[in-house]
Amino acid sequence: MSSIKVVSSKLAAEIDQELMGPQIGFTLQQLMELAGFSVAQTITHEFPINKANPNMKKNVFIIAGPGNNGGDGLVCARHLKLFGYNPIVYYPRRTEKQPFYKQLISQLDFFKVPILSQDDSDNWLDYLKPENTLCIVDAIFGFSFKPPMREPFKSIVDHLIALEDKVPIVAVDIPTGWDVDQGPISETFITPKVLVSLTVPKPCSAFINPKLTSHYVGGRFISREFANKFGFEPFDYEGTDQVLKL
Ligand SMILES: NC(=O)C1=CN([C@@H]2O[C@H](COP(=O)(O)OP(=O)(O)OC[C@H]3O[C@@H](n4cnc5c(N)ncnc54)[C@H](OP(=O)(O)O)[C@@H]3O)[C@@H](O)[C@H]2O)[C@H](O)CC1
Ligand SMILES: [K+]
Image 1: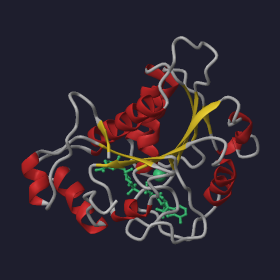
Image 2 (image 1 turned 45 degrees about the vertical axis):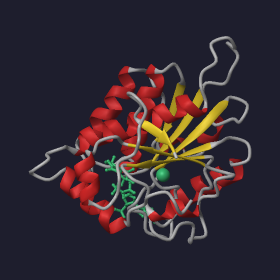
Image 3 (image 1 turned 120 degrees about the vertical axis):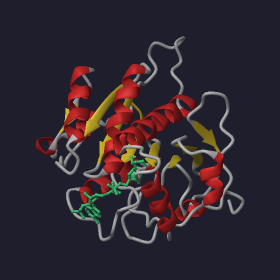
Image 4 (image 1 turned 180 degrees about the horizontal axis):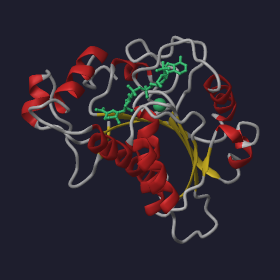
């Protein structure tokens, strides 16, 4: 794993700031759209729909947290629906942190993607039966998580940990509960089957076990010059792919 380029959380934050700064001018919505699209594309690579098997499981259970990692999950759900999967979103703590989160929800309503909320805290597991679920998307927390984990997320993650051997988990950017630099140091953390690092892997990705977890990079939004300025080479994406398996 040591050959994979990683950048510290501090540098990752600087990269984001500059991408969304006055000179380059990306908006958070644009980056989130590409991030969520990358995660959906990773799912098409890891869990492709087999058209010859009409009985194959197509449910993808997406758990969206209150921040931008959760926003990536909402975008991912919309693209999965367009790719032919049956996404189901659990969004237990809606916030008004970004006004456009509401628009992401409206778009999911438009595509008839079911969204469970705080009111479903007693029955959300009914929608996550291993016999129907192809994979789970962990879009709970990304690089701004600070332990210890508070409710309702602690209980949700404990349930996911119990399901890990039955349903593969795809983690968005950082596996939930991991420290961005030091990895799985808190007591509640997910061990994903797939990790999609966004823009560039953060140091915690060095703690994944390649025998247990496939590692992708996604969020194809930087130029060679920009990558070099931050001390790494850009990733060698194939053709029009938005993700690269590392
Ligand atoms: N350029 C990119 O790579 C892009 C990455 N994106 C994604 O954005 C996340 C980071 O998003 P951010 O909003 O900064 O943070 P998180 O989603 O990780 O989490 C913040 C929320 O989590 C709550 N929180 C934090 N710690 C805890 C805890 N211990 N228990 C419960 N809740 C917690 C926090 O709540 P507060 O009350 O503390 O504010 C926040 O609500 C990155 O990882 C990528 O996935 C973007 O899409 C743009 C492109
Ligand atoms: K995550």
